[in-house]
Image (cartoon, rainbow, N blue to C red; front, top):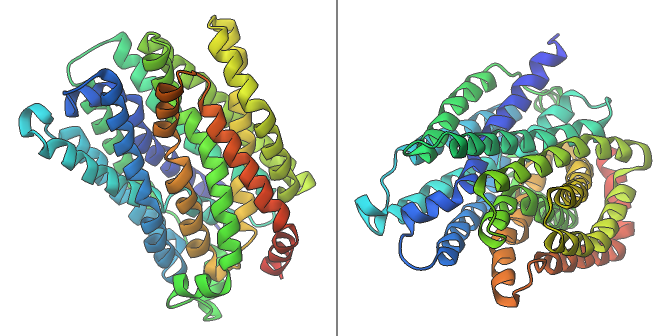
Length: 420
């Protein structure tokens, strides 16, 4: 019998390292924009950099199909190990790649290709890690456990922002390259950690009972499309606020409010820290009152609070006021992220869980969550309102609540059938 730490730590640490690799791009977005998009205004530099960030995210549903097939057909362990290897390779190459000055237009094209590989790799990570850990800890506070998995994503963001702060305080040439290379080396460590993990007892039971699916994606589309649609909606809503926090905070402070980049990264660190702490706590709340009630209440709170919070933050620039606003923003992100995995994974049967959840959740991220940074930036530039991102989040929250209301009986039925 494996000790709990030998199961939890390699999975969580691998998740942390992989999300560091994925997030460090946005932390150094202002530097990357000058290195790969030297022509035009600074706002265009940032917008193109954020667009490439989003294009990388758009690869996630494709990766969700691929890693869903691996995870449901050959095992959760293999899917997680392959995801780590792809992220490590792409991050190492990003640390070595030539800039626009060296290759011209081919440099941003290469950057795009590597971001696509990162997007494909990350698609098998977060939902896959949640499945892996929950299938080992089936009866141990699943909401808290799933919230802990999502919180580990934010630890990677914290590490990336800390590296960014150190690079600002101790400037050296090509600091962004060193950040990527550091991520690649840590990814290698994560890869070897993943080699030591064991398969989940749930998947072993599926293998013994010969219940694994030869074509899981086709089966899940045919038999569980309603669960996939709900998961898509959850992925869209939860990732929109999470990506606003972890992928746009520093860009907003540095390029919109014109604050020093060290201060911007410090604010990113703080709001990510609050979000990270909130996720397992609100996941524990979902254990008590249920994931459906928790996510409905979280969405109502997000719809009501996001606009006044961002208005407050844009009108009162002092550190104290920003800390108050970022605390609320971090908690709103934490409550949505904390319950999301627990909720969506309770909709699918074990033999179709990886394919159904991975594709659908990543599709929501690709179409809505990952597009939050460039859409937020575009809304600000077009409306001249620094709190304009709130309108996008509110729109998604209203549509999400309407979808849940119309499908409330379907959701309850799916949750009962998945556990029967």
